Structure formats: structure tokens, C-alpha cells
Amino acid sequence: MMTSRNRTIQISAAERVALKKRLLKITATKKKLCGVYNGDYLKLIKALPEKSIDLLFLDPPYNLNKNFHGAKFAKQDVHSYTSWLDETLAALKPFLRTTASIYICGDWYSSVSIYTAAAKHFVVRNRICWEREKGRGAKTNWKNSSEDIWFCTMSDSYTFNVDSVKLRRRVIAPYRLTDGTPKDWHETNNGQFRDSHPSNFWSDISVPFWSMAENTDHPTQKSEKLMAKLILASSNPGDLLFDPFAGSGSSLVVAKKLKRDYLGAEINEEYCLLAEKRLLLAEQDKRIQGFAQGVFWERNTQAEQDAASKTKLKK
Ligand SMILES: C[S@@+](CC[C@H](N)C(=O)[O-])C[C@H]1O[C@@H](n2cnc3c(N)ncnc32)[C@H](O)[C@@H]1O
Image 1 (tube, rainbow, N blue to C red):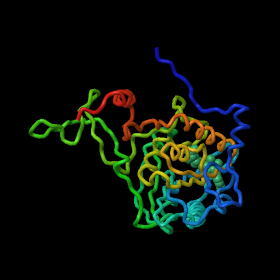
Image 2: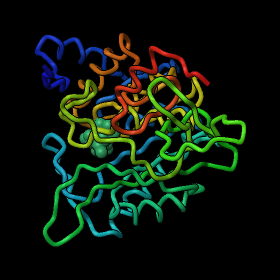
Image 3: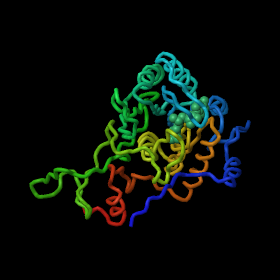
């Protein structure tokens, strides 16, 4: 019989003491910084060398009313949010390498500001539309169930590992060549699949939920699968990822699993401790849900992923 289990990550009183000790302290030494800093990102960057970040992941409070564990962020007019974002990007820019990539998250309303502010500082290359699915239904409007992730770079010289972020999908109409061999797809014991080029429309990722091992109580946690796509595409092992609004540490945890260096700031202590706990768990378990055999899998393919990890592709 199937049983459902809430796997949301919790912190015990004893763990709290130990996790607090792991938080990053800013010292005057020139030692390489790595880990989670509990405080304003503006304080942390003062300790960073200029031109040291390879990948900047920005998941700031969106331009809407939100309560982050007591810290309330209020919706502003578009002009004010654009100015705030502009100042944030200006503060971070000196710390980016000339080859760095930058991703900035937002909903449709924040997006108006993101493009305007980002275009002042960076080369804006794309806008990924993520079909988040979960969202509150509205009686007089369309349900808000998508988010945008803007892709920018510092220059025309940047990393993009397209082969690391292919999406494995079921083949609906399996076309064969005249000799009978599959055209651009694989026959497996579990069905027919194609590894397709990653597009700027992401429909294969859900928000973390109660039965997922990565789930926490952070209200806007990004999934590890989403982070893995960005990190694999836009960095190489050993590169430094910086996340100034780290929340529950999703970007840092995935960077660690994928052997990148990582540094994050988070103003709320509770979220910092969750991030620390997840970083500890990542030492034992490097799996990323939805990413297996070097490819990302479309939704609802867990059975095929499990089977594929036991059997090799026939072709
Ligand atoms: C959208 S959430 C990030 C969620 C994160 N990506 C995750 O997967 O959990 C934004 C976070 O920024 C934090 N924050 C807001 N202002 C900050 C600041 N000036 N410095 C550091 N953290 C800040 C908030 O407490 C909140 O947790």
C-alpha cells in the first residue's frame, strides 16, 4: 500500500546550536569565502574581491506583498521597484568577472522592472518562462502560475554548456529512417525518448512540495532541478556562484552537489540554518530530483528514471 510522508526539512533545538556555529564569519583575512552569511548581502560583498564571481543568481523579494518569517516586503510602484533593482545590480556588478552570467527571477509584474534595470548593466540574452503551476486561483483574473528567469551576461564571452542541460522527453510520434533506425530518439526497455535541446519555456519543474526531500518551510523556495539547469549551463566545476538572497539555500546546495564554489547571504537566521542543514545533507546525498543519467527528465517520469538507472540505453 502507498503511504504518504511529509518530508519537510526541520531543525531540532540541538541541531540549531550546531548549525549556527557553521555560519560564515567575515574576517579580515584574504581566505576564500565559502558558505552562508547571516546578514545583509551589502555587508558580505565588502569582503569579496572584485571580479571574483562567475555566476550570480538573484532571487530577490518580488514586487508583491510577502512575509519572509516576519520580515514583510510590500508591493511598490513599478518605478520604485526598478530603482531598487537598479541599485542592487550596480552594487553587485564590480564583483562579477567579465565572463560572468547573471540570472534574475521574478513574476510577470517584477519582470517589467527586471528588464529595464538589467539592460542598463548587462547584455540581456533571454527570458526563461517557467510554468510553476502552483498558484492561487482568482475570480477576476488569470491564475498567476508562471515565473520569469532573465538570463544576462557581462559580455559576449561567457560559458554555456548546452549539452549538459538536455531535456529527456517521451517521443509521441517515433519517426524511423528508411533502414528502420530511430531518428533522433532512443528505444529503451521503458519507452521511447528523445534528448531535446533546452528551450526558454520550462514546463518540467514544479515548486518543492511536502513529499520531496528538498522541501522546507521557506515560502518561495526554488527547486533544486531548476537551480541545476542554470548552474550546469552557465558555470564549470570550481567556478564561484554568489546568491545575495539565498533563502533556504537552494542555489548553494546545488552548487555544492555539482562541485561549484558557493557563497550566499540571507538576512533571516532561520532560513540560514535551513540552508546549513541542507548543505550538510548534501554531503551524504548528491541526488537532484528530476536530473538523472546526465539529463533532465520531463514531469511524471520517476518510474522511468528509476528503471533507466538500472538498465542502459539500448541505442
Ligand atoms: C525570494 S527569497 C529567495 C528564496 C531562495 N531562492 C530559495 O530557494 O529558498 C528572497 C530572500 O531574500 C532575503 N533577503 C531580503 N533582503 C535581503 C538582504 N538585503 N540581504 C540578504 N537577504 C535578503 C529574504 O529573507 C528571503 O529569504
